[in-house]
Figure 1 (cartoon, helix red, strand yellow):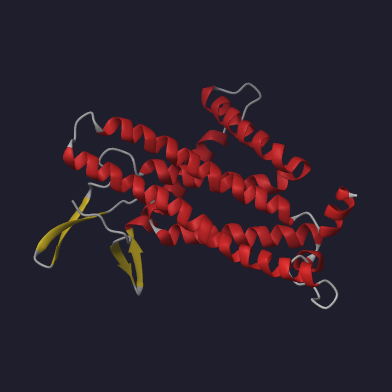
Figure 2 (tube, one colour):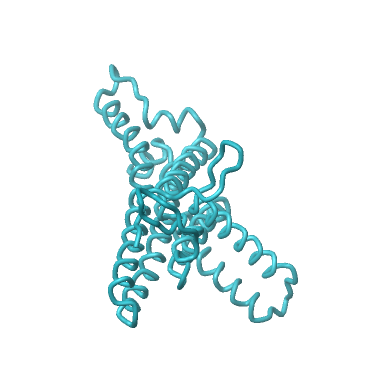
Length: 252
């Protein structure tokens, strides 16, 4: 049994190393694209089972987004839904039987170690950091787009001579914007990686029946983590699109 904190390199393309986590993220992306194509290539007013299932799934998630962002739901839904489904499938694909058992043996310090070809993308900190960066950049983008760059940056940069307390609060909010990257990345990575370690240890000790409850728990955790990441992104975007002027008017 080998548990590696960092994703293992499996292919080298020039100077670029492809890790098993990157490879799995490509696989998940490809499966999502193929699934979206197959599910929408024959859209009908009288949907079949597949189209009906997809429509119900999308509508449920859209209603959830709309309950938070209301009239802005159409703008935010594509990004938030992509986060949710990519993270969800990335979390769940690592729980498939034999998923991490397919690989090649390599010699390390006189020991043969299995290097798996597949690894859940979200169990690699690089992937979760990339997702966190995209989320935080998107928050700033929508904030600037909706209320303007002056109003958005005005939340963080205030003249300390005129409004010292608001200037201090603005600095704290700016620090919190960067802290969101760490919060997003480590929450998702920590939960998924810890779950994989738990399943690996339990399976190696008692491979029959006992791991099943833990697998069920990780399916639930994988869903919750995807939902939390997507909804937090949505809430932060919604907050970023509200100017201080609007907040002051609302309070009065």
